[in-house]
Every structure is written in structure tokens, then in C-alpha cells.
Image (cartoon, rainbow, N blue to C red; front, side):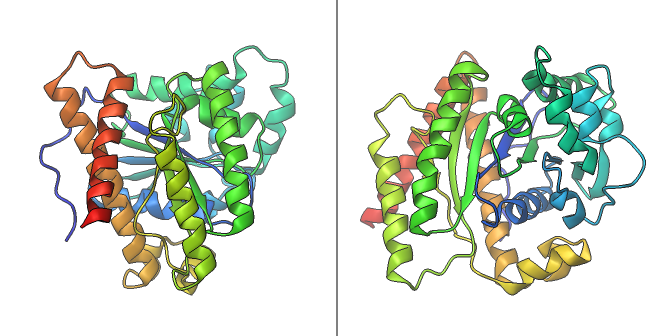
Length: 318
């Protein structure tokens, strides 16, 4: 059954701003960004997906024309006076996009040496939040390119948390350590509020011994970090993993999400459950904030993370 929140969202709450990143291509990052955003929007939450990749795959996945006239994320990054609301496109019910375009590749060189270049996207999101005529987004998902440049750093500077889509392969596991080092660096230099929400397993085959070993290693790594002062202290491996499913590979060529194209497919069911998990997690954090308004953001994250850790331990011991 779809998740029903215990209480309605109030306008005073912050948005849950998530950067989806992996420096390795072909791991399901854009597929996850688009279909997770669609799942959250399908749960009735106003959601924005920002396409920070010059390849514009998330834009195309939603059936939008990356070459169409009009503002895009490129304008928001290169012109601090640009109205970010003009770059919004309503793609589905409760789902808006800030599309990419091929010119976005030039943003790296155009902004080289510009003071405050990494903060421009964060500033644009703040202006959207303050604009009473803009949609009141509750979730913002950013599809970051598979490289550590200005575009990814802009996403990380604007985000409150990072989610890493990946395959349960040994080499991918090795790359997670580098990704976490990057998040730690960004938290020190650009965004002290940044944390790691966790990992979403894509193209998953739970039947192989190798897959199970990689998942066990990931969960063991996160469990060992619970008492450390690191951005991934309360990260987790989200459930369920997204099963390997040809329909997920087919739907972008039609400009459709998996819910448009094959809502009965295993991939649609998996992303729906993941979306519900993120919404439930966010509602839990907001309930804690409402009950104790004096709590800081860091304390709220710790409280939410602690509850998540306790629940997972209970599931394992059951």
C-alpha cells in the first residue's frame, strides 16, 4: 500500500535536497534520479529534479527537449541575477524539472576563477524557497555528472545529503571510499551540513554469492562508522535494491519514467518502495523537529539516523 504520512507537511519546513552522485558512469544514477523523483511525486509530494549533467539524460528521460528555447540550469549557474523560476518545467503532476542543455559543458570554463561559483545553485534554491509564486518543493533531487568538477561540486554545495546509486560489484565497492572522501572534503570546505544518506543498489541480482558479499561489506562498513564523526555516520543501504529489469533500460528512449512506461514492472515496484522509504524517513525527521523545535539540523539528522539504525538491527535479530 502507498505510504500515508502521519501528518501533513507545513510550509515552514525545509526541503529534502539530495545529490545523487557516482563518479563511475553506467551504474543507474540517472535512472534512479528520475524514477525516484517520479515515485516521490506520485506520493503527492512536490518534487524538483535538477539535471546537472551536460549529457542531459535526465531531461531526455522525462521527455523534455534539451535544445528547446528557454532557461535551463545553465542560466541559473552562469547568471546570478537569473530568476530560477523561469528555468522550471512542469513535467508531471507534482514533478518539476530544471533541465540541462549542451551549453552546460561550457559552464566549467566560463566560471573558472569566479568567486562564489559553487554557491550559485544553493542561492538559486534559496530564492525559489522564498518566492511565494514558486512551487513549494518538499524534495529536490540533483542528477550529478559522473565527474568531480564544478557541476558536481555545485550540487554538493547545495545539497543536505548524498545518495550513491551503485552496483554491488567489487570495483564499485572500491570506488565508494573515494566518493565518501569527496563528500568529507566538500563538507569541510563548502557545505558543513552535508551528510551521506546511503546507497541505492541498482541492476541488482541477489542470487550471486559475490553480490551478497559486497552488500555485507557495505553494511559492515556503515555499521562501523556509527560512533565516528564522519558524514556517513548514519548512512545505510536502502531497501529494496532495484532489480535488474529491461523495462528500466527501455523507458528513457520513450521519454517516460518507469511508472509511465511499465508501472507493473519489478523496477517500478522497487522505485515506488524506495520513494516511500525516503518520504517516511523525512516525515520522521520533521515530526522530531516539530516536537523539539530547539533541535539543530545536526541533532535532527542524528535522531533520525539513530532510529533507522535501531530499526535495522531489530530486523536483523528478528
